[in-house]
Amino acid sequence: MERIFAPWRIRYILAPKPKDCVFCEAPKENDDRKNLILYRGKTCYIIMNRNPYNPGHVMVCPYRHIPSTEDMNEEEMLEAMKLVNVAIKTIRGAMNPDGFNVGVNIGKVAGAGIAEHLHIHIVPRWNGDTSFMPVLADVQIVPEALEETYDKLRKLL
Image (cartoon, rainbow, N blue to C red; front, side, top):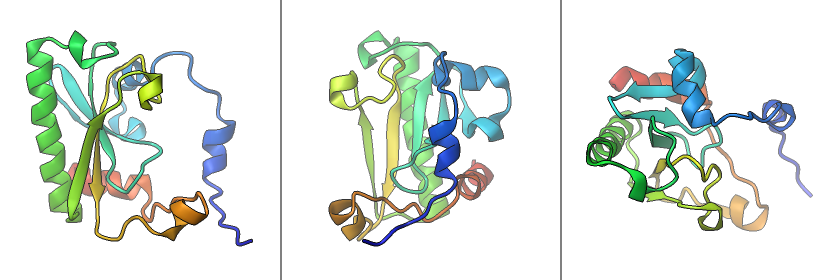
């Protein structure tokens, strides 16, 4: 059996899990680089995923702590979709992906890791980015450090 070492993951594994909602707390800290917040709008913001599916995986979150799109007001819905487009254009300009997955998981059963706070995933995709690793080894390789991706995307925003 081949082993792949990812020593930086131990910080996440051993770190105390936050009691408060990370999507509510991150914008309050006012340290966008540390919290990987790329852009702040009036009702929503763009934040990078700390455990990305691919490099450039970001999310659009409303500031309000709401669990579903049904709870969004019209201003939040409009700004959220505008920020989805801003994210796509920014990622396209910085990373030149072949396509995108954009999605919302509402509820734990639908796959939401943080079901209590709505977030829209924007995942860049490249031809051939699904290799044998996730299929055969249940391993995913993210080839770029979060901070490098952050700097690349933030520069274009």
